[in-house]
Image (cartoon, rainbow, N blue to C red; front, side):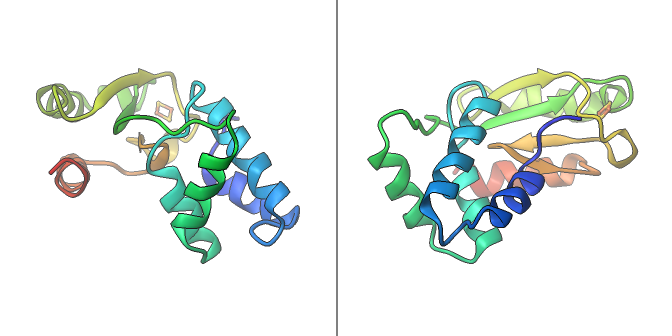
Length: 143
Ligand code: FES
């Protein structure tokens, strides 16, 4: 089973997050570890919304802990598994739009094939993705 933010939010809530800052820090460490050594820039927003806290709280924690690092720019991860990978129009749109705007990565099957095509934008999972969703994400984030 691949890592996903929703499960992490639920797990660390059981550990006391967001009130318990140790639980929040452990969660941020896990996010960083699961995302190649940097916290995707959309993750603090998603965590703040999930817990009903201010994003500035999470950004302050990230700044305060030297081992935590926020990614520099936007990142789109497209599932290239056997089901989602058939969505060549989505990949073609991503390839066309990415230069100078966001990093584009192809990742193995996210193990959510029944809800594909799947993508992650700044670490946040989107299911049943289509060109309209991708255009909206780019428009909202890459001005
Ligand atoms: S092919 Fe995309 S989740 Fe499996």
